[in-house]
Structure formats: structure tokens, C-alpha cells
Image (cartoon, rainbow, N blue to C red):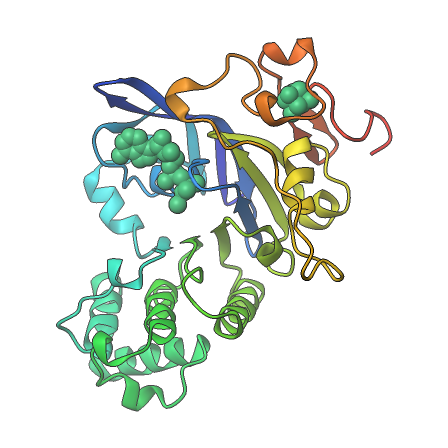
Length: 323
Ligand SMILES: Nc1ncnc2c1ncn2[C@@H]1O[C@H](COP(=O)(O)OP(=O)(O)O)[C@@H](O)[C@H]1O
Ligand code: SF4
Ligand SMILES: [Mg+2]
């Protein structure tokens, strides 16, 4: 059984302008120790997916349909008390802005110790040891000294490492990371990704790693979900999806990546822009930008499964039967 299974999740925002369907029948699952990458342009519903899973949607957002099954438990039935037990303990989130999870007026050691004490019965010495171990695990040198610092005394990269240490402290089953390295330079980013991948391997922690950058996910993720306009348009093992994408949108994302020899020359860009969710085309949401669109695409494409891969397109790039 998968650690978490998300099945046909629909999340809506009820605004004065009407109902915005931010997630439309989103399905995926994550096994223990595996990393699921979620990619898509800005506005495709990546953060809404994370917030839906963490039960952190603010009004007017709400889950309208679908299931979230975590270790066999139906999370849509969980009440506030159950969520206090789950959040930070079994499921932890790392936000793009580390200050979303750090307290600016508390020393690092004290606040990480508090996270631990909230869910575990440990004495002061055990708490200190666990905090030091977590800081070391995210690559922070001299953690004993760092524990006495306040967040504002640290660089952005260091703060994000502390936020990640905070997330792994209670050895959660699942970490949801929403573009946590986007603001960091590439070297720090690579170090953090390397440490996260090791963590997943060593501890069995599953991860959902959100990014708008498909090149970042290549070495980190085992599986990939490509999102467009609130839908998962393609899903499968990361190596296969990147080597042989089925959906024209995935192909477009890959063609838009800089590659050797492209320096100085103009990069390919997918024509047009992602449609606003309140004005989606009736059929395939990608149709206005798609070079393969035909009359049939005016109807919504169904989810098609091909072995362990999946897509939502009438005319995928590789004909059925050859995958
Ligand atoms: N609070 C909100 N009220 C109304 N619509 C929202 C709200 N939050 C998100 N949305 C809608 O959901 C879409 C997806 O948002 P988001 O998940 O944040 O995108 P991203 O993929 O960049 O993380 C937005 O473009 C917007 O249409
Ligand atoms: S369903 Fe049609 S418009 Fe949509 S991605 Fe496939 S070919 Fe393009
Ligand atoms: Mg986002």
C-alpha cells in the first residue's frame, strides 16, 4: 500500500467572480522512501495541492471531492485535534519562505526543541542531541553554536536548512516541500537536494517536492507529476517521462530548457500563456497552445493509463502500445 494516495481530488475557491476549480481530479500516490516531483508553470495548482494535503487551505478554498488516504486513514475526515497530531509529526511541510515555519524572536535551538517536545517525551539532553543531529543532517556545520543564533543572524540558505531540519525533527512519514530552494543559489540548492535525497533513502521518509523547474527534479525525484491548469496532465517514473514524454505540454517544458549549445541563441518557449482558471477552454486546457490540437480536443481528454504511466491527451507523442 502506498504511504499516501490522492484520488480524484477537486479543490475549489468560491469567489465573487464565481467558482474557480484550482484542482480538477488530481490523482497520485507516494510510496515510502520515494520522492514525487510536481512540476508546472506558475499558477498550475502546485501550492494548492500542497495546502489541500496539509489541510491548510484558507477560505474561500475548500476540497469539493476526492480522497486523501494517508497510511490507510481518510484525511478528509480528520478533525482539528487529529491534524495537530499529524502536522509536524507525521506530515511536515517546508515552505518557499523559511520564515513561514520559523519564529523570528526565538533562538534556533529553542524553537527546534519546542517542535520536538510538542510530539515526543524527551528530556532536555535528548532534545539537544536530536536537534544537533537534525542540523547536521541538513549540512549545518558547528550546530552547537548555530543553535544559539536567531533566524535574522543567518543567510537565506541557512534559514531554509533550519526550516528543513525543523521538518525532519520528528522523523515524519511524509515531507511536502513547496519550492524551498527557489530563492537560493544553485550550489546551496544542489547541496540541499542531495541531502534530502539521502534522507529519503536512509530514513524511508517520503517526499513531495514541488518546483516550476523541471531540470531540478531530474536527479531528485523517482516519480513525476506534470501539472497544467489544475490537472495532472502526465505522470510516471521521472526517467521515463523525461526521456519520452507523452504529453505535448511536458515536451514543451523540456524543449524550453537551456541545453549545451543553446548559449546565446534564443530558447524555445511554449507559445502563449497558461489560461486563467476562471476562463478555461471547455476541452483540453492546453489546446490553445498545442501544436497537435485537433477538433477532438474541444472535449476534455480522459486519463489514459499505460502500464505505470499516465497521461491526459487525445494525441500523445508516442502511440499506444509502444511504451
Ligand atoms: N486564495 C485564492 N483565491 C482564489 N483563487 C486562488 C487562491 N489561491 C489559489 N487560487 C487559484 O489557484 C491557482 C493555482 O495557484 P497555486 O497553486 O498557488 O499555483 P502554483 O502552481 O504557482 O503554486 C491560482 O492561479 C488561482 O487561480
Ligand atoms: S488533448 Fe489535444 S490539445 Fe490537449 S494536449 Fe493533447 S493534442 Fe494537445
Ligand atoms: Mg506555488
